[in-house]
Length: 187
Ligand SMILES: Cc1cc2nc3c(=O)[nH]c(=O)nc-3n(C[C@H](O)[C@H](O)[C@H](O)COP(=O)(O)O)c2cc1C
Image 1 (cartoon, rainbow, N blue to C red):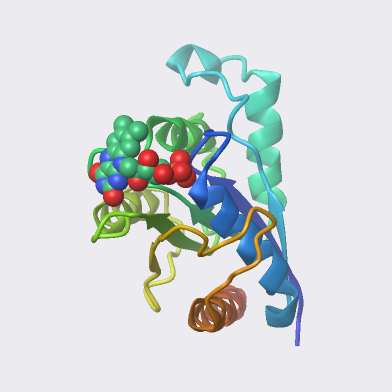
Image 2 (image 1 turned 90 degrees about the vertical axis):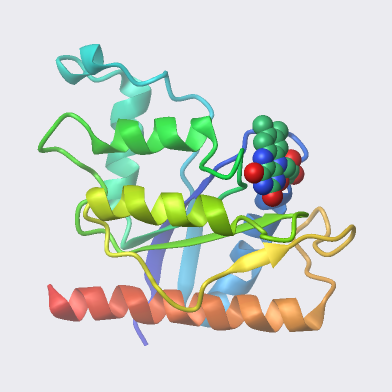
């Protein structure tokens, strides 16, 4: 089975982020799904301005190159006010420009997120799907992944304490692999 290099974005810059923990859990489980997951950091990106189109800041250029070099992308994000956190939206705006140089175009992408709330990021993920459709990123439809956090569900080192969640995440990662493979076959 082909192995793929997948970049991931964490839509939170909190030092105690539960979504970062979820990302760590995915990194640990990924080899079993023939994926290698590497974070592409978003915290140091400047706030996007159209002024950057004429002269792309170095951090933004590196960020865009990293996405373009990945076989696929995973976005792990919290929900802020029923939508996508500003830091993540800034990263996606940065990736999308200058016009005609959209780094997400054609990149197979999958989304997942966790919160303690009952909807477990479902509303944010719908907004994210809308953004990714405009960015022309073929986005995995199923299985959807809304992870409801409870204390201790994922340890600081990314170890998942609930076997049924670990099994679900592995199934999800295998679907990410199949999604990337399918896009490769189509291209
Ligand atoms: C500005 C703000 C808005 C939030 N809005 C939502 C929300 O709409 N839905 C939700 O489930 N949780 C919401 N939360 C709670 C977050 O899910 C919670 O803070 C979570 O820990 C954030 O993820 P992180 O730990 O990965 O940063 C919000 C938190 C903040 C700070």
